[in-house]
Image 1 (cartoon, rainbow, N blue to C red):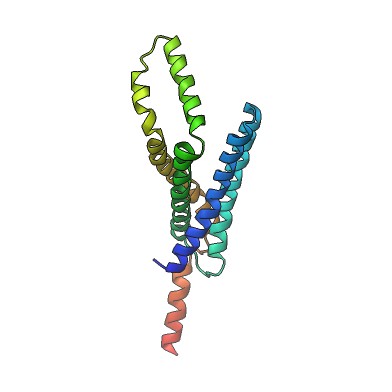
Image 2: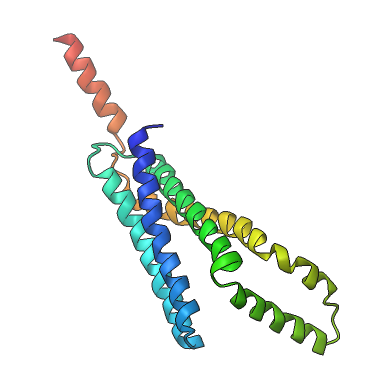
Length: 178
């Protein structure tokens, strides 16, 4: 794998992760209502998909020939780096920066379970491990989401013709006969 491709994907993954991190910080600090949270989530989704498309398209620009697989692999690489950064941030968010938000949400879940007669002993035992679980789930979730979006986007960023192999073969045959 090219180091240029890796460094480009890592930097673009950082930029992609910043959209999610800023969105999370805004919803945590400001605590908007449900409607504004939904709108912010939609804006974040559109921004990340558009950024991923932009990064794949920019990576393909200097190349004369850019296959679907090239776009897919680069998009998944960008998404994976972004997923790693987001997962690390969410771990820090829940474990160090804003642990009270996780505790408040889990207390609400436990209270609702207790009011309905549910067993809450399992939730209380899991509480210390929520940041770790969130790290793993976030890593897989964002990587799979990136794979899906990259698969769709790569179809729109490819630069190939149906007869690409034949054109090169004809050019090689002409050059050899001269």
